Length: 464
Image (cartoon, rainbow, N blue to C red; front, side):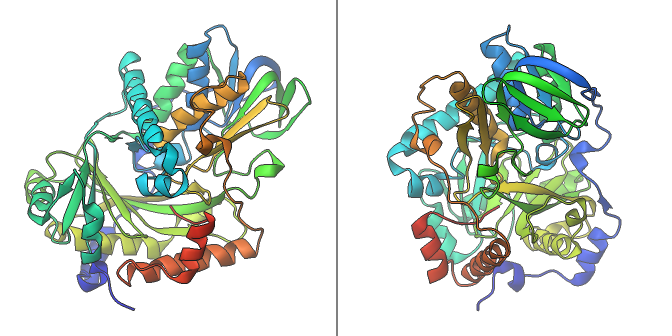
């Protein structure tokens, strides 16, 4: 098996040791962030719509529901705190793509791809208008995303209108690993992820949504009007929107549709002016490299570098557990890859390390549906690209609950479901086989083996 640039140009162990020495386990985005406390639900509440889940998907659903009909009574229930899970700890890449990239969309819905790309850009524009309309303090920067080739076989993948050769890409961001790039200038914005969640909650509350935190839903029942039961109360509602994502679905039919995959992240201390000059990055794009196991990285408002990805870890049983967030080997690997990418930043320290669960599904992007004769709608499986796509999903769920036939609900992407994952132990065996095969492909000039090709052919995969 061959090597990758991250092995050929591996930094000294002492560089990694120094960078990680004083790193604190905690989510940078959630540090010292002022938040409004919402009450726990006790007793019975009546509503037109109850939303389960206080992440982006649930918050957008609540906001969009009130924007459509200000008289509609909306309740949102969150088991922990608003934005505490994936919505508060992701990289902050708000992408236009609804399909986890053009290639995935073309492989699955080629006849719809032009339409899906248009709808995705319209959705991103809609997010920006919402940010501006409500004066949302979310550190919004629509700087686009720069994909880079770090291996010779990846250069061809960059070809197109946005192609940057080696000199051009290194003029944007100075890394000796970059061989070429492709800059999508309009299809992605950088955002402070936790502020986005909390600002959506603020807007929702101002529009009249009742938010309840620390309220775990124990079940949904009913044939007509639905009852959402919690540990200390209930909500009786005409309609229910389920937005639990990486957590177990409240619908049995969806229990095997997603698996929680853990993603790991480092955040540096703020760069000095000299360090910024050494790497360039004046246009502040989001960055990602192009392997099956890829990194994503971006600048924060105070010029830190967030560096995450590559490892995508599934734990037997498919549970979300706090103990899975601490994985020293993943943080060391990220730190090593960081200094391969930016050797000129040797001596820089990481201040924060953290992880979070991604709701991964076999087609790599969200799926949708209804239950209980249209009384319950759901969206899940965003597979790491939910910062922007959750707003689109909110509109899909509301269209379906309102019985509307729209351009969104007519999409094949919306009308079809992914292949479910098998139950344990087959799920763990399969996921780990796929991870090993993707690692071999990255070490073999991107060539996918027969196992991966067979999964591609049936539309099933595994990604972060």
